[in-house]
Image (cartoon, rainbow, N blue to C red; front, side):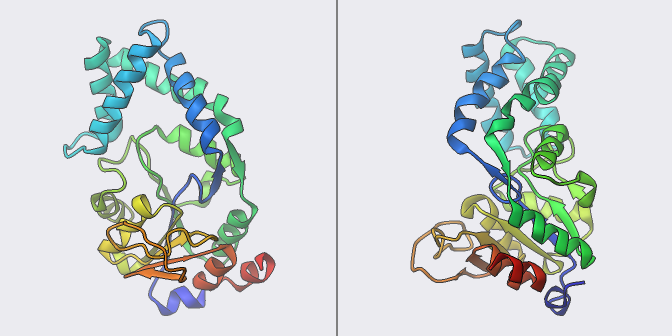
Length: 260
């Protein structure tokens, strides 16, 4: 176990995925994702109609307060707004993950510093969790992990639409995740790159590190707003820095040396 984490009583690292564990080409993704999503439904729902429906469905699922998983709610709502029966909507949504999502490969790229830090934490015996926004099936998450050079089995838990009922940026997402992995807030740290989505973990008492070499989120508050005073420590429970600074923060010295 990393000495720095052990002294803080931390045994679990929560990782954001896109932009943190794996690089994301945002502009390319925003262009291609709608095309890929519509392709899975194109023979049963016109693309324009489907994309309009999907946007509204995802907005509603982000506010999910029911006992349905996010996947169950997406499938139900897609069926309602497109006129598809539930089994067909479910099959098409899973086909999106299995057949269409791999077409987005060019949007993602490995991040060598992420692989180095994950490897150091694994050697140190630290539990690691993928805490990605759980709107999509597990298969889309494991596919991206492999694109990033990770074996999904490295992580003790991976959030997905099939198992989660709450989403980022709501603090309830982190509450639900902690319940699933059997950990207290003080026993975890959260690593991400988005102040709005990852910062709210600090409201539960989970220390947050925002990967931000340019200090864009330097004055992030616990509530997720951002300013810019240029400091490395942001707000209550939130720190910003680059990969070398993260390695030091986690106490994995080998990574800190190799990345500096």
